[in-house]
Length: 192
Ligand SMILES: [Fe+2]
Image (cartoon, rainbow, N blue to C red; front, side, top):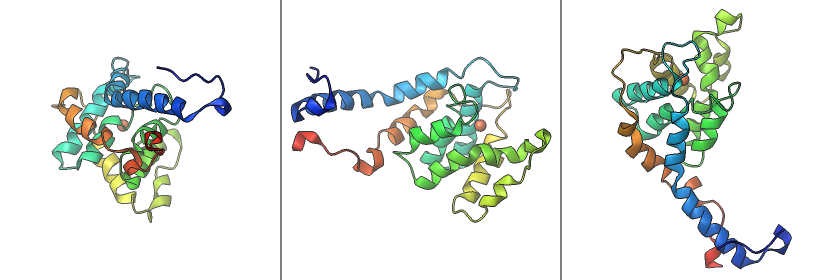
């Protein structure tokens, strides 16, 4: 069942009920779509010792073994998922995917992890490795430093005992299965 309008200003409530039903079904598949995209990071290492897929799994593995909570583990798993689509601002992709489902400070952490991670290499490019210090007073500063220093920048080790993707599927399903924006999204047109 599809909507019958050809332009929005001709649409009726019934059209949006049909579209809403499709959207709800489509949203159910978010975990599989995210996983499929994560798998696209497999293969090319771009000169690093491991590919981005292993790097993401390893970052999540280290976070989990350090006792990080579920949101942080999912952040670790997805933080570089935008590397292929947005190589110059990839952090925005993971932040946008997770923003409806997680704490805003964790979104901030993911959005800024590129700059914070840069502490470990920016000086090799003639850039200020301490640029992240500008955010020292931000409430998410400490967690972002920890994320990068303890789990992200350390996760390029091909010999590390990295957990497989299937291990993380349940936690991914739990976090992405939350009501988006705590349910405060579009109104449910079916009840109108
Ligand atoms: Fe990373």
